Image (cartoon, rainbow, N blue to C red):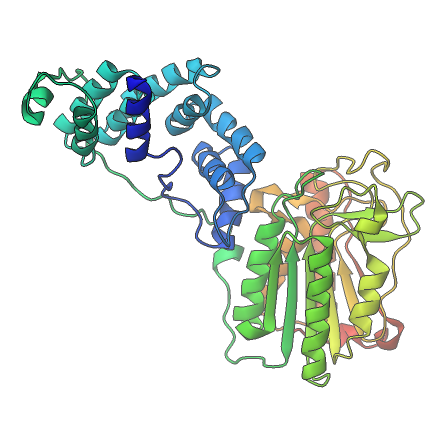
Length: 448
């Protein structure tokens, strides 16, 4: 019983998973960058994401314990010391091997903080725990003394004062290095993400809706979709001059929230009496019906089997066309061929590379799509973006946003087509679909 109480006391001093990792995200953009690092096997990023998913972070990350444990195990299996410790603490009897892995890893790190964490590994072993705390105290750890005092006051010490009892503890012999903690910077993957031209004036009549659906509950995630959305938002704000109150940027939307975003867009155009130019951007999964006659955006809570839970593309195009805006330009970085960005079948009842019937834009709408019927909309892993979105951003960067839609279309089609053949060895052919109302004029339109 005493050992149990001592364990509780020490866990109060050092709460499990309560120490915020230094690179924990403070914004959705930082979360997106962290996820990209994790997907490229950055072990520190995996550990931090495990923390986020296990604990949740209000306004940033929804708690997903199963996903957090899975990512924690991946980090632990790769040798991350804190991940090994926490794997052991979560299920001590089941995960004894992680205790030994954590011990060896912390010894190699060799800082006072690492020694302090070794004590936590032995929180139910009074002798080892107090000796490791004494070792950490000896090397200047700021919290070790308070934790030793917790032990002292919870046990019989035969009349010894705290100082006498503490002096009786024999520290372990370890090599200690200077404890230099450096906050990990968020990696900048490509200069298209950072070298963003700034407009000379604001565009009060530009309204932007951005959806980046990356983290799916039932199907594979869409790598880099959130980064696509995050960076495109920056270009709309900085390069195209859209005012912050005229930008709606969403990540990981359900069916209901997609509908809510569309209604908000409609209300905004109505309030401004049709004087707004609208840009709509979507990066995420798309899916065809089994017969290929209809296509849908896939909300993050859908699996593609029940099409009533998916957002019909024809419905979206009707809604965009009926906004009553001066113009609408839509960018859809998704394919509707039944595959994901890695060319893997999205749903068991859809074969990849399905040919499908394309929905038709209405009224003053022009739609840029990432791929043609039967093709995959690939990721560009080197650049941490969807291939289509990368070249959309690149053209906006090179021209400072001052290009016609015709010039933008030619640039995207040429560069995406060539890069897909070079990198993926498969074709990806972006398309542009203008409504009949602007079929002869859309090429002269500009985004700013």
